[in-house]
Length: 562
Image (cartoon, rainbow, N blue to C red; front, side):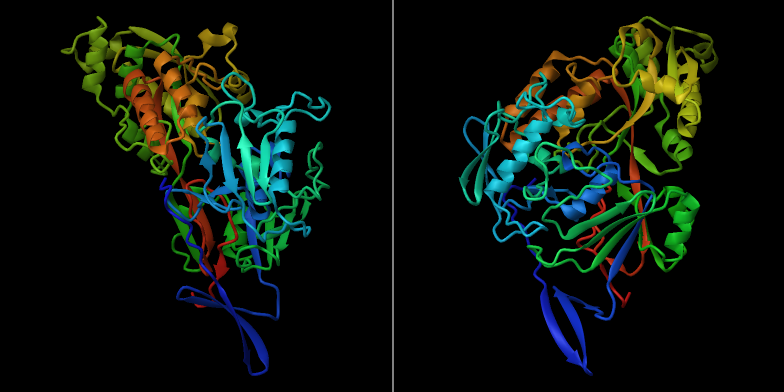
C-alpha cells in the first residue's frame, strides 16, 4: 500500500439547464456527463439470493449483510473497491492515522461537515461512543450483560491470548472535536485493516442503543453513507433511498432496492428481462451461457480472495509425506476438468491481489517424478519402478473426509485416490452427511483426531490483512487451525507482525512466514482461488469490479447512451 498516495476526489458539478420549459440536471465527472430525468425517481434494482441475516455491524460476519451495511454506514477507513489493489483510503477519517512510538496509540484526524441520516453531526464524540459500544459487545470491559450475548465476531478484536485489543477503560481519547486517539492494550499494527471491516463502521449515537443489538426485523440502522436504510421485508425486499446531505457528491440513484430472489431460475429471468439491473452473486454457469446477450454486461474473470485447500492432518501426516502428496496432485486436471476453469491455482492462502501478497512465493506443482523421489528418500519404493509397481504398493493409508452431494469434493476424492496411488498411498473414501463433516470443523476433538486425515475446505478473509488469514489457519493458538500445524518460528514472526507498524517491514515478515509455510512445511495442499462472476444491465456504469465481491451502489450510474 502506498502510504503517500492521497485520495483523488472526483468533484461533480451540478448544472440546471432550462430546455423548452423543462428542467434537466446534468452531472459532469471528468469528461463524462449523464442526464438525470426529473419526471420519475431513478431506481437501482439489485437481485440477491440472500436474506438480511443481521443489521447490527458489531456482529455481522456474512457477505449479504455486509452489502446492506456498506450502502448505509461508513468507517474511518475503507478499502477502495474501484482499485484492483484494494488500497486503504480515509472515509470518515480526514487522512491516514499516526502511531505513537509504543504502537498502542493510533491518532486519527476526522472529517468535518458530515451528518448522520438523523441529522446528528459526526464528531470525535461519535467515534468515542461507537468504540465504547464495540468494547461492550466484545466484553472488553468485562461487564457485558450475558443476557445480551457476546458478539459472534468478538475474535476479530482479540489478541492470540483471548484478551480484547481495545483499552478496557478508555478505548478512545478525544483530542478535539475532530481528532481522536484509539487506545490499545498492546501493539496491534494491523488495526488499520481491521477498521475497514464493517464491525468498526460508525453509527449515530442519537438513534442507536449502546447496550442492545439492533433488531434485524424491526430495527433501524443510521449511518453517514450515501443511502438511508428504509425497511426490510423478509423474503421480499430491502429498501434504501438517497441521503440528501451526503458529504460527498450525492448518489446518482434516488432509490436502491435489494430484491430477494431465492430461486435461481427466477433470478436469471429477472436479470435477462431487466426487472433487476444487477444480480449479486451471479453463478459462473449462468454467465458463461449468456455471453451473447448484448443488453447485459458479463464479467467472470475477477480474481477473488477466497482460498480452497486440501487439509492434511499434520499429526498423522509428517512433513515429508505432505511434500510428496503436494507434488503428486494433478492441479491442471483439478482446475480445468473438475472446476471448468472457473478457478485459478493458489500459491498459498493469500491470493495474488491481496494487499502485501508476495508473488515470489510458489507452491508445489504437479511433478510425479519429484513426488516419487521424496517417497524413495523415506526408504519406500524405487525410482526405477513402473506405474504398476507403485500402484501395487501401499506405504501409507489415509482417509479422505467430505460430505456427499458436493460434486467437486466427490470428484476430487477420485482424483486424489488415482494420483496418490501412483506414489504408493492408499486413500479410503469417507464421504458422509453434512452434519458428520461439519461437527469436527469448529474444533478438533481429541477422540476424533485419528478419523480425519485429508479433507477439502474453502475459506474467505474477514478483512484484508494477511495476518488474519495466516493466524486463523496456521497458528497453534487458533481454533481454526484444523490441520494442527505448529511451527515455533512462524508463531514468533506472527507476534512480530502485530508490533511492526512499518508497512514495508511487516510485508517482509509476511514473506518469511509464507515461504516457510508454503514452500517448506506444506501443511496444506494449496489448491485454488476462485473467480468472481458479475452480471448487470449494459447501461449500468461505475461498477466496482472488486476481488472482495462487495456490492457498492454509490459509484454506479445509468448511461442512456450505452
